[in-house]
Length: 158
Length: 154
Image (cartoon, rainbow over all chains, first blue to last red; front, side, top):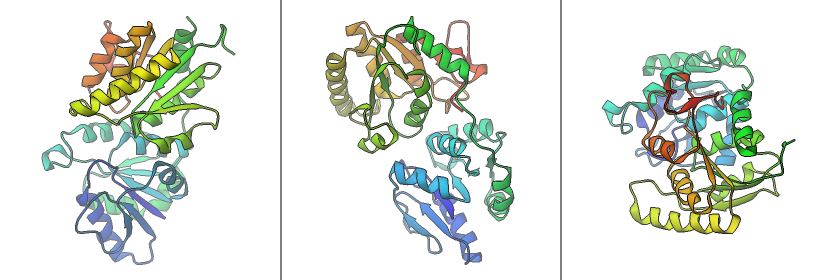
């Protein structure tokens, strides 16, 4: 299953519609999309407005590819579960979020193994086409830095 | 094992990425008496059955009425569980908890969200002044006056 998720705060039709168009051309692909309160809804993919966090986590675990906005919860969960992730950042200039922080996030996380950034719908479709290749390149999760945990432990104990 | 006796710790995060990052810090909280505070009852599924969870209003700094309700909920939790240390990964509930924690002389830890990769957030700057330990997860955002960089959750 290809999982699309745009988070709970606002819909993201540019992403959902691009995947929907791709799915129209690939009728055999199994796509599930969490789309928020987007209208009109996509026609080629199964979709829901919201997924509760526990179900979302289990869907990420099972997904062959996750396609998402640059939301931090999704990024960390994908890293943690070793799920290949394609980020399509919301752009402030298109009013898809309040500023360009998602572009910055995508820029900073895009070089991590297991994360790819699509900067256009064309590169998004290209990455979805290559999903089996991406899956093979995705490592299991990095742990929280031992130094960070030690600093917090020492502070609590002090 | 902790070198000293268990401390009462309150671990606070709002939803989404903030909560996921707090969970990634749990290894540092083991051995302590932890009260988790977040904004959605569903997150209980992320904890162990015996973990203590307090669910509070999901307020942002733009909604004054919800903020007042959140403040009372946090105050009640702080008075009830008397944390010695309060740790937060953001956002608004964490800032308020650090502030209210002063009433019981709780020491504060602020771990700024890894999402803030270009600059420290508004709540992060405010929390930095309240926290005794102020951390960023990006080395290029650390400064001599804080925050410090000691690593990240991913």
